[in-house]
Length: 564
Image 1 (tube, rainbow, N blue to C red):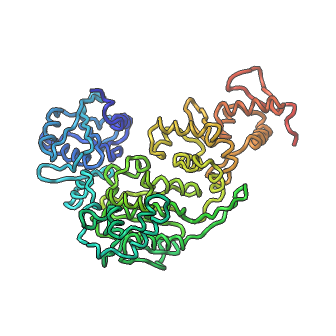
Image 2 (image 1 turned 135 degrees about the horizontal axis):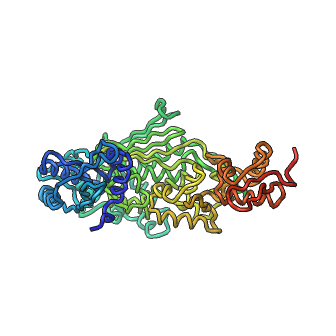
Image 3 (image 1 turned 90 degrees about the vertical axis):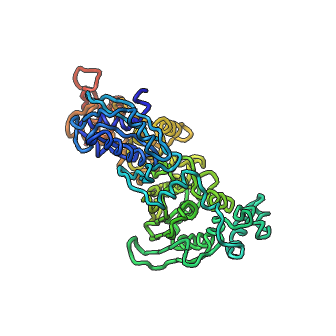
């Protein structure tokens, strides 16, 4: 079986090690390096632990025969362990039995073995019930409760669909009124549902099954003493004293409404007038992003953990801390496009019916999009597994230049998260390659290139390609640069400004060539050649010497060179 069927990260890392890197610096959530232990049995034990660890996250590759703390080629120790032995022993000593793949791979004359581990369909453990899970470049043991949570997630167990120990008598009338109010906003069959008797309403929503309340009903419609859904605090500055707080043991629907209203009441609106006279009212934090972050915390948290959702609000930072890790398979680096795997499927479904959650996604893309449209950083999502997930939104007054510009884009462009991420990236970096941009978009190289090509089409005209040293790079189009120049993190000059700088340079140094122009004005070879050709044609510059072609041509003052 060819090497390329295994992790390209493993093969790339081996090349980096050969060039002087250390294996331990290249290990990740999906890559580990091991060397032979004292015997085959001890080596198998090490590989077994690593395989279980990878299977309980999203899979990965183990490279056997490499010292992890030795830089350069000396790290390649090689291994004599049998591929068949590795596969057989891991299969025999795991529950459920794991089937791994393995190949021999020769590198710098040493025999290595690459073991490929797939993400498990169920939680993996050894025959004694011990299990671990990858976190960064480490394997952390799972407690009994953590293992149970992982196993439930893997089997698509829906905690929210299970029966509650509460009854219809425990349903809050205030929560029912809130649900009916939400349903009356629609013009479809949901409006009819709003007028149904309580038992029918709850049954049609899926909150009653077999005559019993579900846990989703308990979360949304019932109050549990000493178990508030949210703890909300407001501070006048991040890290400052708490000025107000909310921690009420009320149903989730009511807590969501109350916390949302408190956040909105503490934000400062900024009026922005567009070129066509239309006026927008923008807030410190986009209201769509607030609703999505708050709703996601309520719907996708791990309710087997006892803590409340914690919301920490100041004018410059709004943080949402939700108990439990991200669902298995979802990470901050793939959260925009990975297939949705709701932990609480029934709860999420009811929320969609009530308008608490977006129908087609988890709403994460909307948070990204709305933050960037106001000239702010995208949300910062941190998976502090296994304890919590943290979402941080950056506040402060919106960037009016960016807000005006994005508001003038066609709706299908301004509502596209890829477009907003490209715009944000190129407002902070003058140029970028497809490979550099792909992790930000959370897409592969081919899909990222397709996004850039679409944004360079004349009817959109957001980016333009630049070919430098044979490598395609992308930058904002001249139209976008002109509109966003005051908001850019770098300085740009238009053609007239460059020409004036060229004249000043030649006046001081007598000559200039293509290479110098590239270095001083951050132009590629073609851009520099175009500026020189334009100035020669206008008589401002002229070629010096007998050389007519090539990058070594020197240019000096021409007949129309400006006088002081």
